[in-house]
Length: 207
Image (cartoon, rainbow, N blue to C red):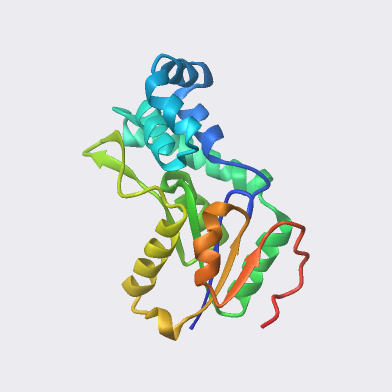
């Protein structure tokens, strides 16, 4: 079994997609205002470059007590825009090459599953492993459902996805594509790691 795992932001896209989504849900000014009135919470996380803690804080401000259905409307429209105008042609060509070869393709990202599930469906991938938001009935709580899908968590979550599909890691040949320090563990875990920096072109990866 061959599996190709793709990071999203900076790998399948040209830039970050998380902050624009937060702005669309919460509004740029209200979101910034909420963060500024609580510098004792955001300041230390920024100083330590603790992206996981910062993700928890901004998620709480952006999503707490919002209706899932309302956020889903925003997420679906945002995903449609990403697919139509924000994806990198070179890495999407690589993704489609893998799919055309019959490989299993999965997106593994710290982005939110709310919009990445729609992106994954549009790209025809086999799975999306992303940061999840906790739900309480029809509402979002603002808390993450599990850890931020970054760094070692990408490996843990991808391993769980493989096992959930009945595939043991030892029986899988894994290709991985990433562009940042948040992909370091995923790339180290892969049999064929590809760090995305320069344009990849349209050629298939070599074994």
